[in-house]
Amino acid sequence: MRNAGPPATGKYQANRQGAGPAAIPPSNAADVIQNTGSKTTHVFNTRLILALIPLTAISAVGWFFLIKMEAAMRVMNGEGVFMALMWMMMDPGEPLSYLSATTFMWIMMMIAMMVPVVMPMLFVFRRLERGANSEFDTFLFAGGYLLAWCTFSFLAATLQWLLHSAGRLHGDLLSIQTPLAAAVLIAAGMYQLTPMKKACLDKCRSPMGFYLTYWRKGRWGAVSMGLQHGFFCIGCCWMLMLIMFVGGAMSVLMMAALAVFILAERILPAGPWVAHLPGVVLMIWGGYLAVLTILAN
Image (cartoon, rainbow, N blue to C red; front, side, top):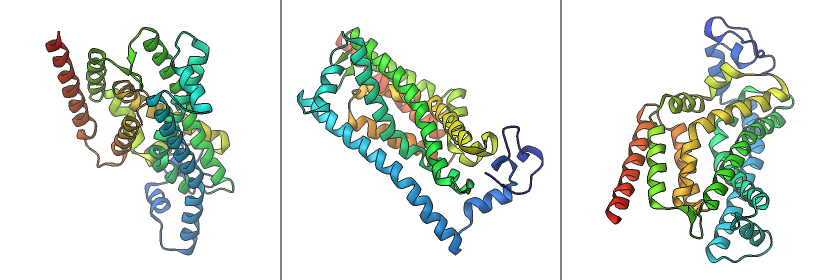
């Protein structure tokens, strides 16, 4: 934040990455977040909403695209780009076209799912960054965040190609079979209980804490913070994203359920149960599928 105000001491002292929210005393930070009731605040809130409308629209377009793509996959029929992507994603024998189409689909998934998740961070960023280019900087932060998820999308697409090439993906929505699904669920549940999950989730749950620690000035600073927050978010959610292969990599219902859960992790009251209880549920679900597999054999 440019002209952030008087520097603080102790743990709120400005860090070497540039003055900004890291230099704001706790009382001033609270004023920035909670100041309401004035004409200036009303105008600011209007500009904030207008700045986030395009991102909301982008997420909505992503969901529309994914719904249309799932419909095409279910009936193995479609038109235009949906037909082309569908056939490319069904032929792992052509790695270049398969990876191109699948990476694009994963990017669309991440845009649809994760833009709503990052909204709380964008609200706080927009309140802290009150410079002349604050709206544009908000988009830059979101762009850095989505860039991190684009990196994850390529890795997820590569994993999908490996699974498909090995004959591990089946059905119109490309899901893994029960034994492997059980292993993924158990692993995802166990990850929910790890220190790594807690550390990354703590960064995602506290926008103000993130900015106090990692604030950087300028446009490149906005991109850098978005990218850094994106990687924290990936560290928090990467195992959850693998659950997509349990319900089907193209299942919009599974995408929506994961998006709601990931957002809930960030906004529900703090406590170990936020991650631990879902982790236990995932392990029970995986154990149930493992028992079914044993009984079937």
